[in-house]
Length: 296
Ligand SMILES: N[C@@H](CCC[C@H](N)C(=O)O)C(=O)O
Image 1 (cartoon, rainbow, N blue to C red):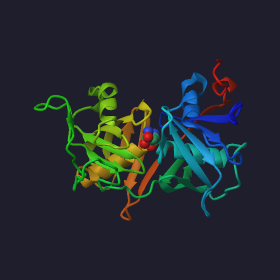
Image 2: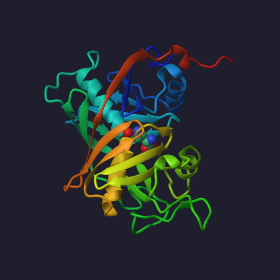
Image 3: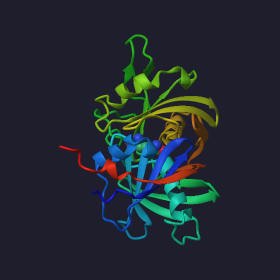
Image 4: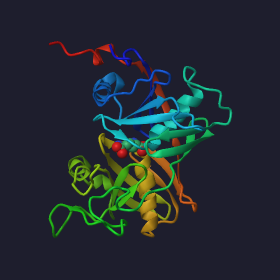
């Protein structure tokens, strides 16, 4: 039986983004893509992202995180999930460690993120620096300016969406700015086509954004490997960076997603800060039958 059977998880959400937190410190076990898919497929442990907490890999860090989408793929970043992990590591009695400072340094395969508690159930994450060069996002073609890349969907002379900005926040994002309500776009239909467009060699998270004020953006996101979600923290960060580069806003905005609001600031030192809530819905244990070999 897998080392995961009967393992305890926390069921949380960050602004509606469904997150499972699984503590595998001290086990040496690494979740396989098929295991992640099985966990996501069980209604009892359904998630948008599975955040697996591992022993630290670098000195000075508190944990190494592996981040799984529902299709079993891994991401280098997840803003909402990172806040949930911080809550779990600071407050959950079974996971908690004595960190009076309310601060954590977490490592993912994309780098380090610093998390700071700002209220009982609210955290600010320093998501690091955006990557803006075409080969860092990555894009297939060498676009010298990633504020608007050549990509459109729909009829050639009357596209539904066109010319997105491209940004990496440790994971790839394309943001289509529109001048009407993002709810009016059929993202469930368009999203998969754009996510898998050959211009994105590692696929991409797809956002439709409307700037509604000098410091306000309405956003909907089709997530790579997870589909439509109620919120995506890295998409909110990428959108503020893109809108700022296009002079649509200043350096910060409240980003309103279907599941709630996130406050984003692109600091003068190039770091992007994301502040938002966490919610603990409950806990569970992974069902052993998810990991048993299928009968012959
Ligand atoms: N929901 C997340 C982003 C999750 C990862 C994404 N689907 C990817 O594969 O890049 C967030 O809050 O940032």
